[in-house]
Structures are given as C-alpha cells and as structure tokens.
Image (cartoon, rainbow, N blue to C red):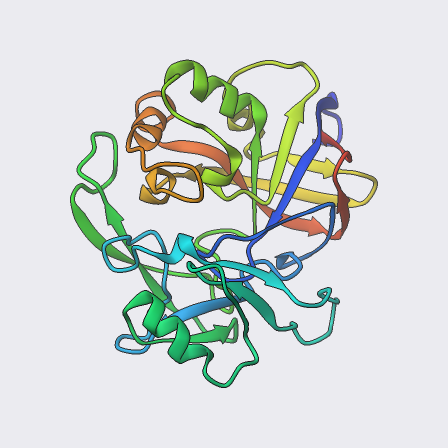
Length: 275
C-alpha cells in the first residue's frame, strides 16, 4: 500500500475510553495509544461469581442495568504503571471508588447478582450475548457464549472507529432513531472532510490508517453490532430500530475494528488519513 494514493478522510472529533467493561465511560481530549489499544480502555470488568463470565450489556436479560453505571479513572493512566482505581457513579447518583473494601457488595446489590470487579490479566474469559429475534442476525432469540481475546476485556479488537458519515447515513435511513456515537461505544470518532454521508469505513478494511503524526492502525474488519445499540442509556431511549436499520442496510455493521501498528498520542482535532 506504500504506492497507493493517499486519501485524507478527515479528523478526530471525539475520543472515548471505557474503564469498566459495559459501564458508561469518559470522553477525552487526548489519549495515549499502545499495542493494547487506548490506554486504560476496558481495564476492568465485573465477573459473575456464579459462572466466572464477564458481565456485559450484550446480554441485557442477565445484566439489564450495566448502562446505569459510569466509570472514570481517579488518576491519569500511565504507560508501564499499575492501572489506577476508578470512580463509579451509581444509578442513584452517589459515587464510590474501586479501592473500597465493600465495593463488590455494593455493585452486587445494584445489579442483583453477585459480582467481583477484576483487572484484565493473563488468560481468557468468556461472556454471553443475547441475539434478539431480528432478521439479518446470525442467531435469533437465543444466547450464545463467546471468548474475549486473551488477557483483555475487549469483545473482538483493541480499537473501534466510527465516522460521522455513517451516523448521518443511518439517520437518513431511519429518521425516528437517535443515532449518536455513544450508542455504539467507539474509541475514535472521525469526521470526514468531504462531508459525505455513507458507510465510509467499509472501504477502509485492510488499509493502514494514520492518526496525527505518529499513530498507525490497521483496519482489521467491520464492527458487527448487537443488542447493546438498542438499549436505553442516559437520555437515549430503548430502540430496536437502531439495530434493525444496520441489519437492513449494512449487514449489521456500524464502524470498524483496528489493531495498533504504532502507538503514540491521539488528540481531538488530529488528522486522519488512509495510507
């Protein structure tokens, strides 16, 4: 691809990190990127004490309230240092920190299941996904298990990117739906310089993506969506039409996954280009 014509798709308009898997996260102005993705992203997860599976909003029948919790880091995350504690906002508005001795009991009561908060470590854990009864999905009205990449709490890949062009196209296709980036939990949201509306990321798969002066990613594949996109979160109401629109018009994909080729710092406003 070194001889390919360079295209300049746009710039970074927002950056997101999710310190605890399936809780709401934090928007950032800048973030360090390592081979394991955005520093501190999905650093922690809740693990079901009864079966050892990671708690995820992909199975809302089992975990209906995860999106009612929000996690942010208490201190800056530093490369090579131990991951700091997190501050968790509970559904009633109170906050607790992950270094509290009774944290697991508080979270277990709030989720009505016994859980333990855990940092990512060696080995792999499994999680569950509920597939709604919807045309276009691989499964319908069933729950399946899947294994997270070893040593992480990511579902598939280390970085998830989404363009505003895709969100704009989805809004055209389903005007009643509120297609906002937070429904899709991306790490990097890119606004195209062209102002086009369409599933721009589809053509990025297999290409190298340069962000700013240092970071290089390889786009590994489309991001297949799940029931999480339909769930209520904050002021966004439950809406199965969000997932149905993706299924009908883009093979259930919204955004793309990427692996890190070269790390560095990403800042809001950085240029993004395909090489």
